[in-house]
Image (cartoon, rainbow, N blue to C red):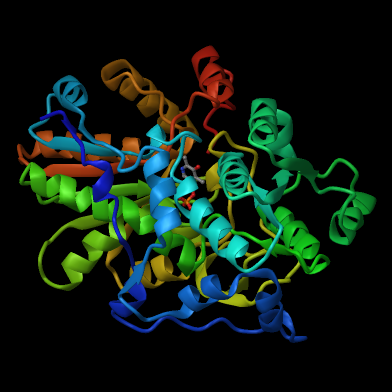
Length: 433
Ligand SMILES: *Cc1c(COP(=O)(O)O)cnc(C)c1O
């Protein structure tokens, strides 16, 4: 079977919470030196989200409204087998991929945007503020807010804002308001622009602006698209669907791969299968793929750090390149972040997840091969996972090993043609990371 689908009524009824099963307990948030950051959390997040963040309950019920919206956007998403890619690589390995590119906003981000908007609405909130890097999260939250009748303000990293004007149109079409960050709307943005009017921004700065905005409006909450436990929790609908789909074709994966920015599509697709590994039910290896130019997992330090640049968030124990790290502008904008999910970090530290860094040239090469064999134009972010899947399939050929490789296709690249066209024209910066 090339395409494995589930019915609408098979959308999961619960989120899977890996906090219940982690091999060590997760280090708690720490307040900033001056204090006050922990308190701020209650002002910017809904009560339900904060409860989920620290919950140890293994399964958390998905509200009916949220489940219905998942069905409305076409979930469950299909699982495909990449037979043409297998043939092209002449590998004995089987390659499957979960298609989060099929959601209306083109990536997995909508899976967390919907519940976050739902919980805020239930608590009487009128507006959500957020940041976006490549634009996928901002797009998803704009749609979710419109679906749940909330306003949405998106701070988009200025370098992406300039590079990707189509994203701005999309966010506005879905009903959101978008500002290039650093912006003049917040004190923090103005401070940065005063020092350097040409500042190209970063995710860390955009987060600081969105939090400041939410703190100054009691009818607004802030919403984060990755990194935190509750976001990974929501994304576990991917992995739960995936497990069912693999059972249908009687497969247990030997290798699972996903790209990592903050860790949400990785956690979402892999945690339900990592649970099986922790329970001794599979012996799968898990590989996290990141850009060599923003090597949080492969070169960062495991320590406490802030989630944003201004230091408004509590400190999280994670791998980090430092909150002031400004990654170079790269086409996989969704992977330009200095930190990583604390849950994912713990599992990497404890040896349950391997990590690989990939060069920009290699991801487009893999994306081209994937487009020519499977017909799908993958997001540059997702191409990191494809690159590793191809490497693993080639290794299987060398050792003549039949194995099952599964990767998460986190999004499509139809709005990322600039990166592909630079690659095709040979104008990617040579040897760029
Ligand atoms: C945002 C994004 C990512 C990276 O974020 P994670 O939280 O690590 O998943 C990867 N792929 C796509 C398509 C994205 O939109």
